[in-house]
Length: 339
Image (cartoon, rainbow, N blue to C red; front, side, top):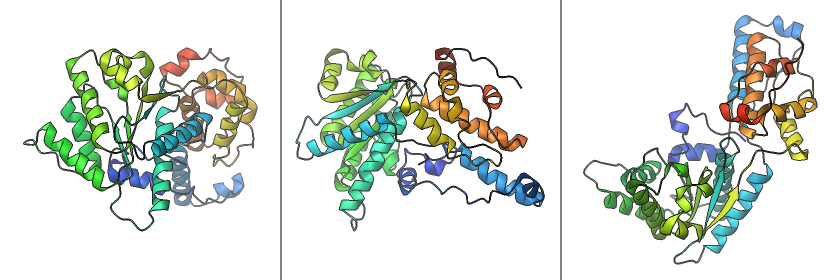
């Protein structure tokens, strides 16, 4: 499973069309023959460039593994959807919270995917249903901006003459008619209840949750330690939402499986099977157990292997890939391998 290319405006998850493309599934891995290095070198230059670009694009896509966090989020979220099915008010929700790079967005989008596919299976002939709505909270968001994000996903026009109430009523009407059952709100850490503006955003989300008969899912960085769960407003959220924390992965069997899963997706002509599995402890130390950093590291090294013609990933190639500040800060400095 892959997530859409963030550079393609038509694939943004925060639009209905982008979400549907995500649900439809990623393009299949390119069916590229695996010739010997000598025969590959004899291919016409244009053919090699085309095949290389297909492989580079394949490695550029974010691969999604069914981690324990993803499975737990999907199971908990689907349970809440069922429990909320006949609730008139005070529906229960879910918060997925943790440090950056620990797979929060992947977990909630996989929950959304599971819900949508289940809805389509139950209602195969129904048209016009929008089972899932996905938005992200913009920085310094206002109540109107949040309402506009809901409208933008649905494709509703947001004209300047429309006030916040007008937009909310239009969104609620479409979601109710389209049987929206799951609303995912990502980047919730951008809300601060210590400001009037942030409090109004929180109130707007709460109002949406009361008007739209759906289960609300929040995701963000360290939400349990933020102002979102403090004060009267925060107490209301804490009393209705279940928390699933995400963490860096420990060095264990699951981590080794993640490395194996990612290595099996490589399309490199000279890469020896299980070479990365043999480096799983190094990979853990290098990334601090961050799944986002692991994915970036392996995909980046694969792209370099194609561009440089080495066609394989070794520790020396991995050493050359810079990682994000968080992963670098949490991981001990690895010793560079001998070249």
